[in-house]
Image 1: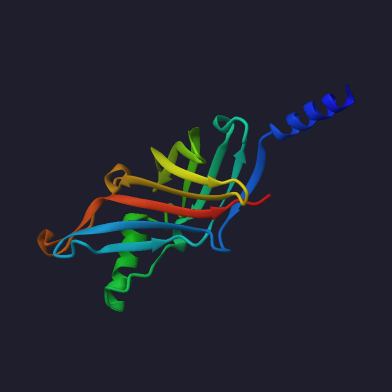
Image 2: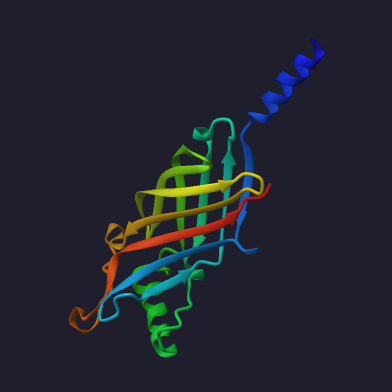
Length: 191
């Protein structure tokens, strides 16, 4: 009888959701890619957000009970494009920070999950709300989890215009930017 009680007690402990922290640094990375159009078709701007923090509540027995919250410092954004001049790179950064993200008024972006759906083989669909420039919109993230190390990779595509941003263009549209943005992340959650 005692071994059965010990087994049931251990199973109950395993079924509890576990709290994890998500912090920047140590190989954790959040990026945003925006593809160009017109004469620059085939090129893309690659932005990195090096400062972020969040938490993950993960329930391995019932993934639908899992939750994630993330706060990203928009002011930390950096662009490392090597295909533009240093002068143009500065213009891209100024436009992205001041005109697109409005970092003086909205220094951070937030993501809060509303639903986690297991898709099998450590793949998940994470639905939630992403807030940029004070505008909250629903997005869906395709994520994978390596449970042994709590390594999480994910990707989501959403539109600039959903956040009242006009895709930048130049030379009367000869050089343009797609409306779609692709956000990707690679993070290790820790206790």
